[in-house]
Length: 124
Image (cartoon, rainbow, N blue to C red; front, side, top):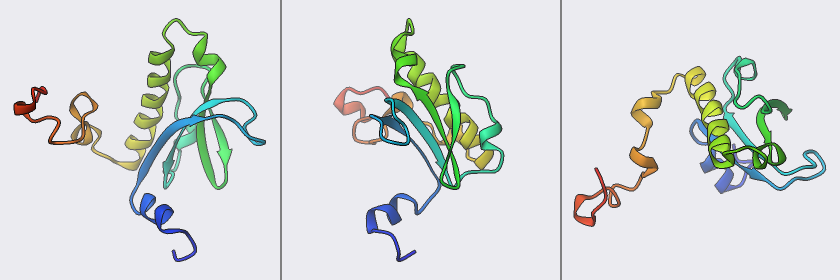
């Protein structure tokens, strides 16, 4: 629509799963990890999230997955906990949206084909 700025229009020109960290505000008073799927597929908020402290929160006309930072930092493996949270939301959103998650996967998280070039010493 013409009612949004060009960056927002481009960002949501295709299906997207977004994830990140929010420092907090009036609606979310504590720092938290978040993730959402747009457009939101039916039944998304019924899907389980990991770890148990993660939850779905109504946000506008859809839902965000939230995992409070304080719950992550006290875990034995905080990085693994945050990554598992993001993975659980990705699994929920991508499966309900009908994505080919295996086909879309990137080797070792590398998306730049130049960086995967054997001449640069990166694994294929």
